[in-house]
Image (cartoon, one colour):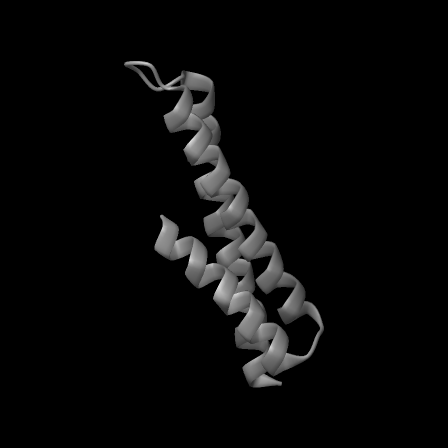
Length: 85
């Protein structure tokens, strides 16, 4: 999880430096920040677990993972469109 966090933030920085701006940069930072939020939810879930994972935080973490995946697909689509332009 921490490797993915570092990779997502490094990717957002790289996109910002190489593509300058536009929707690709915005989508890269949205993905990077959503991974940060997902990591914080995961850490909170583990810290509050006392013998069992709290169902609310566990579901929030699972739903957050689905949202991060959707945002990553959207970002990939913006990168793909940039390559075809």
